[in-house]
Image (cartoon, rainbow, N blue to C red):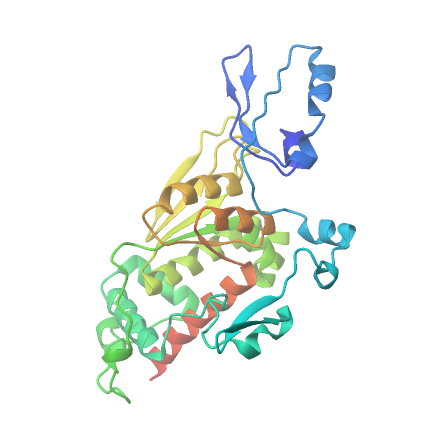
Length: 318
């Protein structure tokens, strides 16, 4: 398995009957070529290595390979990168870097924009605060983040006067099915500066802080949130799924990393639900894109969480 990790392979935990073990997965051809001789060497000829072509997937070290090949699209006359446009019944060639000047339709290759409007944030904050007034556990988490509420909760979160009426025409309807958010726990902890500093002294405290933060986030966003922590180095760990207030926490089983679990569950959920994954693991982001999920970096997710906290504070203050 250490060899497979070095090769940037994706694989399932070993299936063992006590005498033999079978590992199934996939790896880049460039990495795995000639590996049979290595297996023969350290298994004394007893190991077997069987491969078949899986297909094409995003290259994990694209920048390195592109630089090594030194391809220049402007000098490739047989496979030109230019486009052909039509005008007055005739075609003309447009250089690839000038295409935007000639387009009369919007490009579909636009960065994904946030769906949240001020009205939508207001509606979510209102819904979130109304649930706090009746949910003791969520209230405790809320007060650890925003401070103690000295007034009776129902009065504290009741908005008697609204400065501007909501424009309901602009509020986007909620999706019919639940949206899933998968969070790579330890990846986020080590990527966020505030949690990373805490983790150096006390990893359990950093984990607890992340969990409480995500409880507030989930209550606001109303998505199905699954927080995944690596436990693959824990000998004999069968894996564990824990319901903590309003989020699901998964501790992976032995030999199963968080990204392996996320890839597996993304493939299952992505068939019927919108799935987002928060991680700073570049290889994992590419794989989940192939499974039809939306990916977000740790820094993007941090800004999103902070935006949720600002929306809640603004609602309370106003």
